[in-house]
Length: 333
Image (cartoon, rainbow, N blue to C red; front, side, top):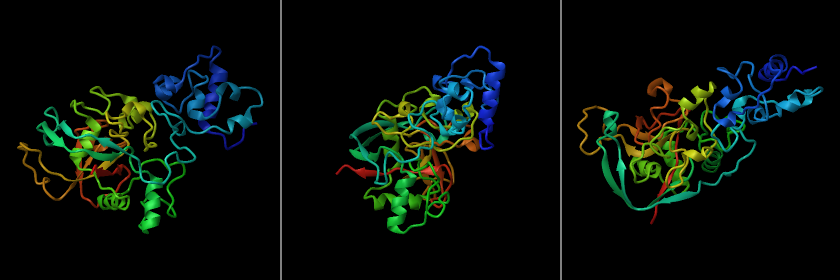
């Protein structure tokens, strides 16, 4: 008899396959359809397919789970969000850390010109213009919970709001740290002998020199970044993901998560671009600029509009929330 601790979703899955599927078709979320590869319309409902791919999300071999006396196997089941979801090369909530608590490795962005902004969208994103920058370094990944904990412990600083007893949530060692203000981010980078990137540096590192719209090119790819569109398609509750999990979303310089996951603080004030004629009281030395979009921004950006690298947002340096994080930069000299 199945134990009470068994996942309800898996109970439904087992019942449906055993009862409704005399011909079992083999499909997997890794094929690109997310949970809909096995569960039509709703990942909480009975599956229409079952096969080896079930292990991707549920953590068990479904064929073995259906064998007589497989209750002990079924107990290993976990919610789909904890598995290896489409587009990701790491599990959502791994037990340990692959990066450790030392400051992130950095990549060199070589000197030269690049195209900044756009003429096609929001008024504060243009006009498109060319900017020349010297060599500089930028973090390959967003700063993680574990890395920030090391800083907070060493510097005796307050930990973010999602920590409990100065510890980040289980399975989130390599997720980007959130609930950090601009000042928190600045202090961390200084502690690591780095600094926050300017918004210009951030955009070049994400965009390269060919004026592309996304880090990976000009066409949106759902499985290349942790965006609200992706979670909507999966019909799952969204969350941050381990940094560097989306190989398809890497920038021309080898920088990860420059679209989605978390908005990233920059050192820049929210100012008008050269030649911008928009009149607004928001420009000036009042708000700091963030870049990159996040896993959650449907309320204002309507799911996905923040994915382009020329997008920017602006907030008071005091603001902290579940979708704001950061990475650091450093002068090449």
